[in-house]
View 1 (cartoon, each protein chain N blue to C red):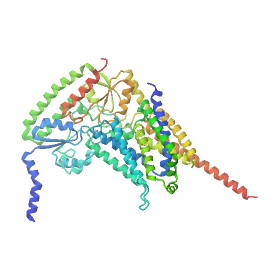
View 2: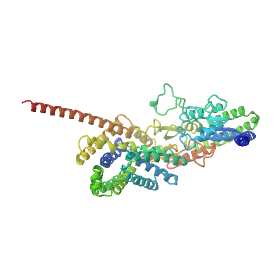
View 3: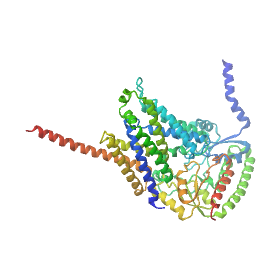
View 4: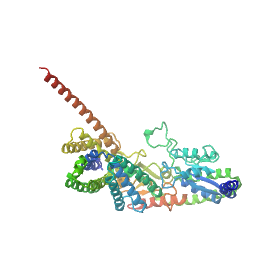
Length: 288
Length: 307
Protein backbone atom coordinates (compact mmCIF):
# COMPACT_ATOMS: atom_id res chain seq x y z
CA UNK A 1 0.00 0.00 0.00
CA UNK A 2 1.34 3.40 -0.88
CA UNK A 3 1.15 6.67 0.98
CA UNK A 4 -1.31 8.18 -1.51
CA UNK A 5 -3.62 5.21 -1.15
CA UNK A 6 -3.69 5.86 2.59
CA UNK A 7 -3.90 9.66 2.59
CA UNK A 8 -6.15 10.25 -0.43
CA UNK A 9 -9.38 8.94 1.18
CA UNK A 10 -8.66 11.01 4.30
CA UNK A 11 -8.15 14.12 2.18
CA UNK A 12 -11.28 13.50 0.07
CA UNK A 13 -13.18 12.92 3.30
CA UNK A 14 -12.08 16.31 4.60
CA UNK A 15 -13.21 17.92 1.33
CA UNK A 16 -16.65 16.31 1.56
CA UNK A 17 -16.94 17.30 5.21
CA UNK A 18 -15.84 20.86 4.46
CA UNK A 19 -18.40 21.09 1.67
CA UNK A 20 -21.45 20.60 3.87
CA UNK A 21 -20.11 21.84 7.19
CA UNK A 22 -18.80 25.20 5.99
CA UNK A 23 -22.34 25.87 4.76
CA UNK A 24 -24.12 24.60 7.88
CA UNK A 25 -21.55 26.50 9.91
CA UNK A 26 -22.90 29.79 8.56
CA UNK A 27 -26.31 28.92 10.03
CA UNK A 28 -24.87 27.70 13.29
CA UNK A 29 -22.71 30.77 13.85
CA UNK A 30 -25.53 33.14 12.82
CA UNK A 31 -27.91 31.47 15.21
CA UNK A 32 -25.31 31.45 17.95
CA UNK A 33 -25.78 27.73 18.65
CA UNK A 34 -22.08 26.95 18.45
CA UNK A 35 -22.09 23.71 20.40
CA UNK A 36 -25.19 22.24 18.83
CA UNK A 37 -23.11 19.73 16.88
CA UNK A 38 -21.38 18.42 20.01
CA UNK A 39 -24.75 18.09 21.64
CA UNK A 40 -26.33 16.28 18.68
CA UNK A 41 -23.27 14.05 18.32
CA UNK A 42 -23.57 13.12 21.98
CA UNK A 43 -27.26 12.29 21.58
CA UNK A 44 -26.41 10.21 18.51
CA UNK A 45 -23.79 8.37 20.56
CA UNK A 46 -26.38 7.77 23.26
CA UNK A 47 -28.70 6.28 20.60
CA UNK A 48 -25.95 3.92 19.46
CA UNK A 49 -25.33 2.94 23.06
CA UNK A 50 -28.99 2.17 23.67
CA UNK A 51 -29.08 0.14 20.43
CA UNK A 52 -26.07 -1.75 21.73
CA UNK A 53 -27.77 -2.52 25.01
CA UNK A 54 -30.80 -3.81 23.06
CA UNK A 55 -28.46 -6.34 21.49
CA UNK A 56 -27.56 -4.72 18.18
CA UNK A 57 -24.02 -4.56 16.91
CA UNK A 58 -22.39 -1.14 17.31
CA UNK A 59 -21.61 -0.72 13.63
CA UNK A 60 -24.87 -2.23 12.37
CA UNK A 61 -27.73 -0.61 10.49
CA UNK A 62 -30.04 -0.84 13.49
CA UNK A 63 -27.54 1.05 15.63
CA UNK A 64 -27.51 3.76 12.97
CA UNK A 65 -31.30 4.06 13.03
CA UNK A 66 -31.30 4.27 16.80
CA UNK A 67 -28.75 7.05 16.74
CA UNK A 68 -30.75 8.84 14.05
CA UNK A 69 -33.94 8.49 16.09
CA UNK A 70 -32.25 10.00 19.13
CA UNK A 71 -30.88 12.80 16.97
CA UNK A 72 -34.43 13.63 15.81
CA UNK A 73 -35.44 13.79 19.43
CA UNK A 74 -32.61 16.28 20.01
CA UNK A 75 -33.74 18.24 16.95
CA UNK A 76 -37.21 18.52 18.43
CA UNK A 77 -35.79 19.74 21.75
CA UNK A 78 -33.70 22.41 20.04
CA UNK A 79 -36.55 23.49 17.77
CA UNK A 80 -38.83 24.05 20.75
CA UNK A 81 -36.25 25.70 22.97
CA UNK A 82 -35.44 28.87 21.05
CA UNK A 83 -34.60 31.80 23.29
CA UNK A 84 -37.51 32.00 25.64
CA UNK A 85 -38.95 35.52 25.56
CA UNK A 86 -40.16 35.72 29.11
CA UNK A 87 -37.38 33.89 30.93
CA UNK A 88 -34.60 34.83 28.48
CA UNK A 89 -33.00 31.39 28.86
CA UNK A 90 -30.40 31.28 26.08
CA UNK A 91 -30.50 28.32 23.72
CA UNK A 92 -26.86 27.51 24.46
CA UNK A 93 -27.97 26.64 27.98
CA UNK A 94 -30.39 24.05 26.65
CA UNK A 95 -27.73 22.74 24.27
CA UNK A 96 -25.29 22.39 27.14
CA UNK A 97 -27.83 20.61 29.31
CA UNK A 98 -28.70 18.19 26.52
CA UNK A 99 -24.99 17.52 26.02
CA UNK A 100 -24.22 16.85 29.67
CA UNK A 101 -27.31 14.77 30.34
CA UNK A 102 -26.99 12.61 27.23
CA UNK A 103 -23.28 12.06 27.95
CA UNK A 104 -24.09 11.04 31.51
CA UNK A 105 -26.95 8.76 30.48
CA UNK A 106 -24.69 7.13 27.89
CA UNK A 107 -22.20 6.37 30.69
CA UNK A 108 -25.01 4.90 32.79
CA UNK A 109 -26.28 2.78 29.90
CA UNK A 110 -22.76 1.60 29.09
CA UNK A 111 -22.15 0.62 32.70
CA UNK A 112 -24.93 -1.91 32.22
CA UNK A 113 -23.40 -3.22 28.99
CA UNK A 114 -20.79 -5.91 29.18
CA UNK A 115 -18.62 -5.32 26.15
CA UNK A 116 -16.73 -2.70 24.24
CA UNK A 117 -17.28 0.05 26.80
CA UNK A 118 -14.48 2.07 25.29
CA UNK A 119 -16.43 2.37 22.05
CA UNK A 120 -18.32 5.17 23.65
CA UNK A 121 -15.14 7.20 23.79
CA UNK A 122 -13.95 6.07 20.38
CA UNK A 123 -17.27 6.89 18.76
CA UNK A 124 -16.59 10.53 19.41
CA UNK A 125 -12.89 10.45 18.61
CA UNK A 126 -12.89 8.87 15.15
CA UNK A 127 -9.93 8.03 12.96
CA UNK A 128 -10.14 9.79 9.64
CA UNK A 129 -7.33 7.59 8.28
CA UNK A 130 -9.49 4.49 8.48
CA UNK A 131 -12.23 5.82 6.19
CA UNK A 132 -12.91 3.67 3.13
CA UNK A 133 -14.06 4.60 -0.39
CA UNK A 134 -17.51 2.93 -0.14
CA UNK A 135 -18.07 4.81 3.14
CA UNK A 136 -17.06 8.06 1.45
CA UNK A 137 -19.37 7.40 -1.47
CA UNK A 138 -22.36 6.83 0.82
CA UNK A 139 -21.52 9.95 2.80
CA UNK A 140 -21.17 12.05 -0.35
CA UNK A 141 -24.59 10.91 -1.59
CA UNK A 142 -26.21 11.64 1.78
CA UNK A 143 -24.64 15.10 2.03
CA UNK A 144 -25.67 15.94 -1.53
CA UNK A 145 -29.27 15.10 -0.62
CA UNK A 146 -29.07 17.30 2.45
CA UNK A 147 -27.47 19.99 0.28
CA UNK A 148 -30.36 19.82 -2.22
CA UNK A 149 -32.84 19.95 0.66
CA UNK A 150 -31.19 23.11 1.97
CA UNK A 151 -30.97 24.62 -1.51
CA UNK A 152 -34.69 24.11 -2.12
CA UNK A 153 -35.64 25.59 1.26
CA UNK A 154 -32.83 28.15 1.33
CA UNK A 155 -35.14 31.17 1.61
CA UNK A 156 -36.76 29.88 4.77
CA UNK A 157 -33.63 28.59 6.53
CA UNK A 158 -31.47 31.59 5.70
CA UNK A 159 -33.98 34.20 6.74
CA UNK A 160 -34.69 32.43 10.03
CA UNK A 161 -30.98 32.14 10.74
CA UNK A 162 -30.04 35.65 9.76
CA UNK A 163 -33.14 37.70 10.50
CA UNK A 164 -35.46 35.97 12.86
CA UNK A 165 -37.60 39.06 13.48
CA UNK A 166 -38.43 39.38 9.80
CA UNK A 167 -39.33 35.70 9.58
CA UNK A 168 -41.62 36.11 12.55
CA UNK A 169 -43.22 39.19 10.99
CA UNK A 170 -44.08 37.10 7.94
CA UNK A 171 -45.91 34.72 10.23
CA UNK A 172 -43.82 31.61 9.48
CA UNK A 173 -44.00 28.64 11.75
CA UNK A 174 -40.42 29.03 12.94
CA UNK A 175 -40.45 25.96 15.19
CA UNK A 176 -41.45 23.75 12.27
CA UNK A 177 -38.64 25.07 10.05
CA UNK A 178 -36.21 24.84 12.93
CA UNK A 179 -37.14 21.23 13.45
CA UNK A 180 -36.44 20.49 9.76
CA UNK A 181 -33.17 22.37 10.03
CA UNK A 182 -31.96 20.44 13.08
CA UNK A 183 -33.10 17.12 11.60
CA UNK A 184 -31.06 17.72 8.45
CA UNK A 185 -28.19 18.90 10.62
CA UNK A 186 -28.50 15.77 12.76
CA UNK A 187 -28.30 13.58 9.63
CA UNK A 188 -25.00 15.18 8.69
CA UNK A 189 -23.46 15.26 12.14
CA UNK A 190 -24.28 11.61 12.86
CA UNK A 191 -22.40 10.44 9.77
CA UNK A 192 -19.53 12.88 9.94
CA UNK A 193 -18.77 12.23 13.60
CA UNK A 194 -18.55 8.52 12.82
CA UNK A 195 -15.90 9.29 10.22
CA UNK A 196 -13.90 12.13 11.68
CA UNK A 197 -14.80 12.42 15.36
CA UNK A 198 -16.30 15.29 17.31
CA UNK A 199 -13.27 17.58 17.39
CA UNK A 200 -12.66 17.56 13.67
CA UNK A 201 -16.35 17.96 12.82
CA UNK A 202 -16.59 20.93 15.17
CA UNK A 203 -13.62 22.50 13.38
CA UNK A 204 -15.08 21.96 9.91
CA UNK A 205 -18.31 23.50 11.07
CA UNK A 206 -17.12 26.58 12.92
CA UNK A 207 -13.64 27.66 11.80
CA UNK A 208 -14.25 28.25 8.04
CA UNK A 209 -17.45 30.08 8.81
CA UNK A 210 -15.85 32.30 11.45
CA UNK A 211 -12.88 33.01 9.20
CA UNK A 212 -15.21 34.07 6.40
CA UNK A 213 -17.09 36.39 8.75
CA UNK A 214 -13.88 38.34 9.26
CA UNK A 215 -14.09 39.44 5.65
CA UNK A 216 -17.67 39.51 4.52
CA UNK A 217 -21.23 39.69 5.74
CA UNK A 218 -22.75 38.33 2.53
CA UNK A 219 -23.52 34.67 2.07
CA UNK A 220 -21.84 34.14 -1.32
CA UNK A 221 -18.37 35.39 -0.40
CA UNK A 222 -18.63 33.74 3.00
CA UNK A 223 -19.25 30.35 1.43
CA UNK A 224 -16.47 30.88 -1.11
CA UNK A 225 -13.99 31.87 1.63
CA UNK A 226 -15.15 29.05 3.93
CA UNK A 227 -14.86 26.39 1.27
CA UNK A 228 -11.46 27.46 0.01
CA UNK A 229 -10.10 27.76 3.51
CA UNK A 230 -11.50 24.35 4.49
CA UNK A 231 -9.99 22.67 1.44
CA UNK A 232 -6.58 24.36 1.80
CA UNK A 233 -6.28 23.77 5.52
CA UNK A 234 -7.39 20.13 5.22
CA UNK A 235 -4.73 19.53 2.58
CA UNK A 236 -2.17 21.32 4.74
CA UNK A 237 -3.21 19.38 7.83
CA UNK A 238 -3.00 16.00 6.11
CA UNK A 239 0.42 16.91 4.67
CA UNK A 240 1.66 18.16 8.06
CA UNK A 241 0.48 15.02 9.82
CA UNK A 242 2.54 13.01 7.38
CA UNK A 243 5.60 15.29 7.46
CA UNK A 244 5.67 15.50 11.26
CA UNK A 245 4.37 11.96 11.80
CA UNK A 246 1.45 13.01 13.98
CA UNK A 247 -2.11 11.68 14.39
CA UNK A 248 -4.04 13.05 11.39
CA UNK A 249 -7.34 14.20 12.91
CA UNK A 250 -5.74 16.19 15.72
CA UNK A 251 -3.20 17.72 13.31
CA UNK A 252 -5.96 18.99 11.02
CA UNK A 253 -7.75 20.55 14.01
CA UNK A 254 -4.57 22.29 15.17
CA UNK A 255 -3.89 23.48 11.60
CA UNK A 256 -7.36 25.01 11.47
CA UNK A 257 -6.60 26.88 14.69
CA UNK A 258 -3.26 28.11 13.36
CA UNK A 259 -4.80 29.17 10.05
CA UNK A 260 -7.50 31.18 11.80
CA UNK A 261 -4.86 32.97 13.90
CA UNK A 262 -2.79 33.84 10.85
CA UNK A 263 -5.80 35.05 8.86
CA UNK A 264 -7.08 37.13 11.77
CA UNK A 265 -3.59 38.64 12.21
CA UNK A 266 -3.38 39.44 8.47
CA UNK A 267 -6.78 41.06 8.53
CA UNK A 268 -5.79 43.26 11.43
CA UNK A 269 -2.60 44.31 9.67
CA UNK A 270 -4.55 45.08 6.50
CA UNK A 271 -7.21 46.97 8.45
CA UNK A 272 -4.55 49.11 10.17
CA UNK A 273 -2.94 49.93 6.84
CA UNK A 274 -6.37 50.73 5.52
CA UNK A 275 -7.25 53.06 8.37
CA UNK A 276 -3.88 54.79 8.38
CA UNK A 277 -4.22 55.35 4.63
CA UNK A 278 -7.72 56.61 5.30
CA UNK A 279 -6.64 58.98 8.05
CA UNK A 280 -3.84 60.25 5.83
CA UNK A 281 -6.44 60.93 3.17
CA UNK A 282 -8.51 62.72 5.73
CA UNK A 283 -5.56 64.83 6.82
CA UNK A 284 -4.57 65.65 3.27
CA UNK A 285 -8.21 66.42 2.62
CA UNK A 286 -8.23 68.91 5.47
CA UNK A 287 -4.87 70.43 4.57
CA UNK A 288 -5.73 72.95 1.89
CA UNK B 1 -36.38 5.16 73.48
CA UNK B 2 -33.73 2.95 74.99
CA UNK B 3 -35.39 -0.09 73.51
CA UNK B 4 -35.37 1.38 70.02
CA UNK B 5 -31.71 2.23 70.38
CA UNK B 6 -30.91 -1.30 71.47
CA UNK B 7 -32.91 -2.73 68.64
CA UNK B 8 -31.12 -0.46 66.24
CA UNK B 9 -27.74 -1.54 67.59
CA UNK B 10 -28.74 -5.17 67.35
CA UNK B 11 -29.77 -4.70 63.75
CA UNK B 12 -26.54 -2.88 63.04
CA UNK B 13 -24.36 -5.62 64.42
CA UNK B 14 -26.39 -8.59 63.28
CA UNK B 15 -24.64 -8.88 59.93
CA UNK B 16 -21.24 -8.49 61.59
CA UNK B 17 -22.10 -11.22 64.05
CA UNK B 18 -23.24 -13.48 61.24
CA UNK B 19 -19.98 -12.72 59.45
CA UNK B 20 -18.02 -13.72 62.55
CA UNK B 21 -19.88 -16.99 62.79
CA UNK B 22 -18.85 -17.91 59.24
CA UNK B 23 -15.46 -16.16 59.55
CA UNK B 24 -14.84 -16.13 55.85
CA UNK B 25 -11.84 -14.16 54.65
CA UNK B 26 -13.23 -11.33 52.58
CA UNK B 27 -11.09 -10.77 49.52
CA UNK B 28 -11.45 -7.85 47.14
CA UNK B 29 -9.29 -7.86 44.02
CA UNK B 30 -8.97 -5.24 41.35
CA UNK B 31 -9.19 -7.80 38.53
CA UNK B 32 -11.50 -10.75 38.16
CA UNK B 33 -8.47 -12.92 37.33
CA UNK B 34 -7.18 -12.64 40.88
CA UNK B 35 -10.65 -13.19 42.31
CA UNK B 36 -10.90 -16.37 40.24
CA UNK B 37 -7.51 -17.67 41.42
CA UNK B 38 -8.39 -16.74 45.02
CA UNK B 39 -11.59 -18.71 44.70
CA UNK B 40 -9.61 -21.75 43.58
CA UNK B 41 -7.27 -21.43 46.57
CA UNK B 42 -9.78 -20.36 49.21
CA UNK B 43 -12.86 -22.36 48.20
CA UNK B 44 -15.58 -22.03 50.82
CA UNK B 45 -13.24 -20.36 53.30
CA UNK B 46 -13.24 -17.07 51.46
CA UNK B 47 -15.46 -14.65 49.64
CA UNK B 48 -13.83 -13.07 46.58
CA UNK B 49 -15.10 -10.07 44.71
CA UNK B 50 -13.50 -7.97 41.97
CA UNK B 51 -13.79 -4.24 41.40
CA UNK B 52 -13.06 -4.01 37.66
CA UNK B 53 -15.09 -6.20 35.37
CA UNK B 54 -13.15 -8.29 32.89
CA UNK B 55 -14.57 -6.38 29.95
CA UNK B 56 -13.37 -3.02 31.23
CA UNK B 57 -10.06 -1.47 30.36
CA UNK B 58 -8.17 -2.07 33.64
CA UNK B 59 -6.37 1.26 33.26
CA UNK B 60 -9.58 3.28 33.43
CA UNK B 61 -12.17 2.06 35.86
CA UNK B 62 -15.02 4.32 36.90
CA UNK B 63 -15.27 4.18 40.67
CA UNK B 64 -18.70 3.34 42.04
CA UNK B 65 -19.86 3.92 45.61
CA UNK B 66 -20.08 0.15 46.11
CA UNK B 67 -16.30 -0.07 45.64
CA UNK B 68 -15.66 1.87 48.84
CA UNK B 69 -18.15 -0.30 50.70
CA UNK B 70 -16.45 -3.46 49.46
CA UNK B 71 -13.02 -2.13 50.37
CA UNK B 72 -14.09 -1.01 53.82
CA UNK B 73 -15.17 -4.57 54.64
CA UNK B 74 -12.22 -6.33 53.00
CA UNK B 75 -9.73 -8.46 54.90
CA UNK B 76 -7.48 -8.71 51.87
CA UNK B 77 -7.05 -6.48 48.84
CA UNK B 78 -5.29 -8.06 45.88
CA UNK B 79 -3.87 -5.70 43.27
CA UNK B 80 -2.00 -6.16 39.99
CA UNK B 81 0.47 -3.46 40.98
CA UNK B 82 3.00 -1.98 38.55
CA UNK B 83 0.81 1.13 38.62
CA UNK B 84 -1.99 -0.53 36.63
CA UNK B 85 -4.55 0.72 39.15
CA UNK B 86 -2.87 4.03 39.89
CA UNK B 87 -5.65 5.94 38.14
CA UNK B 88 -8.44 4.99 40.50
CA UNK B 89 -7.41 2.80 43.43
CA UNK B 90 -5.35 4.99 45.83
CA UNK B 91 -8.19 7.42 46.67
CA UNK B 92 -10.58 4.49 47.11
CA UNK B 93 -8.24 2.85 49.62
CA UNK B 94 -8.07 6.13 51.55
CA UNK B 95 -11.82 6.56 51.54
CA UNK B 96 -12.42 3.00 52.69
CA UNK B 97 -10.90 3.86 56.11
CA UNK B 98 -9.66 0.32 56.32
CA UNK B 99 -6.12 0.36 57.69
CA UNK B 100 -5.57 -3.32 56.92
CA UNK B 101 -5.62 -2.85 53.17
CA UNK B 102 -3.25 0.12 52.89
CA UNK B 103 -0.07 -0.65 50.94
CA UNK B 104 2.28 -2.39 53.33
CA UNK B 105 -0.58 -3.53 55.55
CA UNK B 106 -1.34 -7.20 56.26
CA UNK B 107 -4.36 -7.06 53.96
CA UNK B 108 -2.61 -5.57 50.92
CA UNK B 109 -1.18 -8.01 48.40
CA UNK B 110 0.58 -6.95 45.22
CA UNK B 111 0.70 -10.19 43.21
CA UNK B 112 3.20 -8.85 40.67
CA UNK B 113 5.93 -9.59 43.21
CA UNK B 114 7.88 -12.63 42.07
CA UNK B 115 6.25 -12.75 38.64
CA UNK B 116 8.11 -12.60 35.37
CA UNK B 117 7.61 -8.95 34.43
CA UNK B 118 8.51 -7.85 30.92
CA UNK B 119 9.29 -4.51 29.32
CA UNK B 120 10.71 -2.82 32.36
CA UNK B 121 11.79 0.43 30.76
CA UNK B 122 15.40 1.48 31.22
CA UNK B 123 16.21 5.13 31.71
CA UNK B 124 13.81 7.97 32.25
CA UNK B 125 10.10 7.41 31.68
CA UNK B 126 8.13 10.49 30.61
CA UNK B 127 4.54 11.17 29.64
CA UNK B 128 5.87 11.81 26.13
CA UNK B 129 6.15 8.04 25.77
CA UNK B 130 2.37 7.74 26.10
CA UNK B 131 0.71 5.43 28.57
CA UNK B 132 3.83 3.52 29.57
CA UNK B 133 4.20 1.78 32.89
CA UNK B 134 7.50 2.63 34.54
CA UNK B 135 7.67 -0.65 36.46
CA UNK B 136 7.13 -2.89 33.44
CA UNK B 137 4.18 -4.29 31.56
CA UNK B 138 1.30 -4.86 33.97
CA UNK B 139 -0.49 -7.51 31.89
CA UNK B 140 1.67 -10.28 33.34
CA UNK B 141 -1.17 -12.63 34.41
CA UNK B 142 -1.65 -13.68 30.76
CA UNK B 143 1.26 -16.10 31.26
CA UNK B 144 0.14 -19.28 33.08
CA UNK B 145 3.54 -19.50 34.77
CA UNK B 146 2.84 -16.16 36.38
CA UNK B 147 -0.64 -17.47 37.24
CA UNK B 148 1.08 -20.16 39.29
CA UNK B 149 3.22 -17.58 41.11
CA UNK B 150 0.14 -15.44 41.76
CA UNK B 151 -1.65 -18.47 43.21
CA UNK B 152 1.29 -19.17 45.52
CA UNK B 153 1.39 -15.55 46.74
CA UNK B 154 -2.34 -15.65 47.45
CA UNK B 155 -2.08 -18.98 49.27
CA UNK B 156 0.83 -17.75 51.39
CA UNK B 157 -1.08 -14.63 52.38
CA UNK B 158 -4.26 -16.56 53.17
CA UNK B 159 -2.27 -18.86 55.44
CA UNK B 160 -0.89 -15.78 57.24
CA UNK B 161 -4.35 -14.27 57.70
CA UNK B 162 -6.13 -17.51 58.54
CA UNK B 163 -3.53 -19.99 59.88
CA UNK B 164 -6.20 -22.35 61.18
CA UNK B 165 -7.06 -23.41 57.65
CA UNK B 166 -3.50 -23.81 56.44
CA UNK B 167 -4.01 -27.42 55.31
CA UNK B 168 -7.02 -26.57 53.17
CA UNK B 169 -5.22 -23.72 51.43
CA UNK B 170 -2.18 -25.87 50.76
CA UNK B 171 -4.30 -28.66 49.38
CA UNK B 172 -6.23 -26.30 47.10
CA UNK B 173 -3.03 -24.67 45.90
CA UNK B 174 -1.61 -28.07 44.99
CA UNK B 175 -4.81 -28.93 43.10
CA UNK B 176 -4.75 -25.58 41.29
CA UNK B 177 -1.13 -26.02 40.28
CA UNK B 178 -1.75 -29.56 39.07
CA UNK B 179 -4.71 -28.49 36.96
CA UNK B 180 -2.82 -25.50 35.61
CA UNK B 181 0.12 -27.73 34.64
CA UNK B 182 -2.19 -30.10 32.82
CA UNK B 183 -4.14 -27.37 31.05
CA UNK B 184 -0.94 -25.56 30.13
CA UNK B 185 0.34 -28.66 28.35
CA UNK B 186 -2.91 -28.79 26.42
CA UNK B 187 -2.72 -25.08 25.51
CA UNK B 188 0.92 -25.31 24.45
CA UNK B 189 0.12 -28.33 22.30
CA UNK B 190 -2.66 -26.43 20.55
CA UNK B 191 -0.38 -23.49 19.86
CA UNK B 192 2.67 -25.60 18.92
CA UNK B 193 1.87 -25.74 15.17
CA UNK B 194 1.95 -21.95 15.07
CA UNK B 195 5.21 -21.46 16.93
CA UNK B 196 6.76 -18.06 16.17
CA UNK B 197 3.74 -16.96 14.15
CA UNK B 198 3.86 -13.21 13.67
CA UNK B 199 0.96 -11.18 15.02
CA UNK B 200 0.04 -7.53 15.36
CA UNK B 201 -1.65 -6.34 18.55
CA UNK B 202 -3.63 -3.21 19.33
CA UNK B 203 -2.19 -2.33 22.71
CA UNK B 204 0.89 -3.70 24.44
CA UNK B 205 -1.18 -6.10 26.56
CA UNK B 206 0.27 -9.36 25.35
CA UNK B 207 4.05 -9.64 25.86
CA UNK B 208 3.72 -12.30 28.56
CA UNK B 209 1.12 -14.26 26.62
CA UNK B 210 3.23 -14.05 23.46
CA UNK B 211 6.36 -15.14 25.28
CA UNK B 212 4.72 -18.18 26.83
CA UNK B 213 2.83 -19.32 23.75
CA UNK B 214 5.62 -18.40 21.32
CA UNK B 215 3.94 -15.70 19.31
CA UNK B 216 6.02 -13.01 17.69
CA UNK B 217 4.42 -9.60 18.24
CA UNK B 218 5.90 -7.56 15.38
CA UNK B 219 3.86 -4.40 15.71
CA UNK B 220 1.24 -2.48 17.60
CA UNK B 221 -1.56 -0.51 16.03
CA UNK B 222 -1.21 2.15 18.70
CA UNK B 223 2.54 2.56 19.24
CA UNK B 224 1.86 4.93 22.09
CA UNK B 225 -1.18 3.54 23.83
CA UNK B 226 -4.01 6.03 23.96
CA UNK B 227 -2.81 8.15 21.03
CA UNK B 228 -4.22 7.42 17.54
CA UNK B 229 -1.67 6.17 15.01
CA UNK B 230 -0.06 8.63 12.58
CA UNK B 231 -0.21 8.09 8.79
CA UNK B 232 3.37 6.79 8.63
CA UNK B 233 2.75 4.29 11.37
CA UNK B 234 -0.57 3.17 9.89
CA UNK B 235 1.19 2.61 6.58
CA UNK B 236 4.08 0.76 8.25
CA UNK B 237 1.72 -1.66 9.99
CA UNK B 238 -0.38 -2.27 6.87
CA UNK B 239 2.72 -2.97 4.79
CA UNK B 240 4.20 -5.12 7.53
CA UNK B 241 1.02 -7.23 7.68
CA UNK B 242 1.06 -7.58 3.90
CA UNK B 243 4.76 -8.33 3.46
CA UNK B 244 5.05 -10.76 6.39
CA UNK B 245 1.67 -12.36 5.56
CA UNK B 246 0.54 -11.79 9.13
CA UNK B 247 -2.77 -13.51 9.72
CA UNK B 248 -3.89 -12.16 13.04
CA UNK B 249 -4.51 -8.74 14.56
CA UNK B 250 -5.17 -9.23 18.29
CA UNK B 251 -7.46 -6.60 19.79
CA UNK B 252 -8.52 -6.23 23.41
CA UNK B 253 -12.30 -6.14 23.84
CA UNK B 254 -12.41 -2.53 24.99
CA UNK B 255 -10.87 -0.92 21.93
CA UNK B 256 -12.81 0.23 18.90
CA UNK B 257 -12.54 -2.18 16.01
CA UNK B 258 -12.63 0.49 13.32
CA UNK B 259 -8.90 0.95 12.76
CA UNK B 260 -8.02 -2.77 13.12
CA UNK B 261 -10.84 -3.70 10.73
CA UNK B 262 -9.65 -1.10 8.25
CA UNK B 263 -6.14 -2.57 8.36
CA UNK B 264 -7.53 -6.09 8.08
CA UNK B 265 -9.64 -5.05 5.09
CA UNK B 266 -6.54 -3.73 3.32
CA UNK B 267 -4.48 -6.85 3.97
CA UNK B 268 -6.69 -9.90 4.45
CA UNK B 269 -5.58 -10.47 8.05
CA UNK B 270 -8.21 -11.47 10.62
CA UNK B 271 -9.16 -9.29 13.57
CA UNK B 272 -9.28 -11.54 16.62
CA UNK B 273 -10.74 -10.16 19.84
CA UNK B 274 -8.75 -11.79 22.62
CA UNK B 275 -9.63 -11.25 26.24
CA UNK B 276 -6.96 -10.21 28.72
CA UNK B 277 -9.10 -10.91 31.78
CA UNK B 278 -11.57 -13.29 33.33
CA UNK B 279 -15.11 -11.99 32.91
CA UNK B 280 -14.43 -10.47 29.49
CA UNK B 281 -17.18 -12.70 28.14
CA UNK B 282 -19.90 -14.42 30.15
CA UNK B 283 -18.40 -17.80 29.23
CA UNK B 284 -14.95 -16.83 30.56
CA UNK B 285 -15.76 -17.68 34.17
CA UNK B 286 -12.35 -18.52 35.55
CA UNK B 287 -8.64 -18.35 34.89
CA UNK B 288 -8.71 -21.59 32.89
CA UNK B 289 -11.61 -20.46 30.67
CA UNK B 290 -9.56 -17.36 29.86
CA UNK B 291 -6.82 -19.34 28.10
CA UNK B 292 -9.29 -21.87 26.69
CA UNK B 293 -11.12 -19.03 24.96
CA UNK B 294 -8.16 -16.96 23.76
CA UNK B 295 -6.22 -19.93 22.49
CA UNK B 296 -9.30 -21.32 20.79
CA UNK B 297 -9.87 -18.00 18.99
CA UNK B 298 -6.22 -17.67 17.98
CA UNK B 299 -5.90 -21.25 16.74
CA UNK B 300 -9.02 -20.79 14.64
CA UNK B 301 -7.66 -17.61 13.02
CA UNK B 302 -4.09 -18.86 12.61
CA UNK B 303 -5.24 -22.20 11.21
CA UNK B 304 -7.67 -20.66 8.73
CA UNK B 305 -6.57 -20.08 5.14
CA UNK B 306 -3.19 -21.21 3.90
CA UNK B 307 -1.05 -23.27 6.25
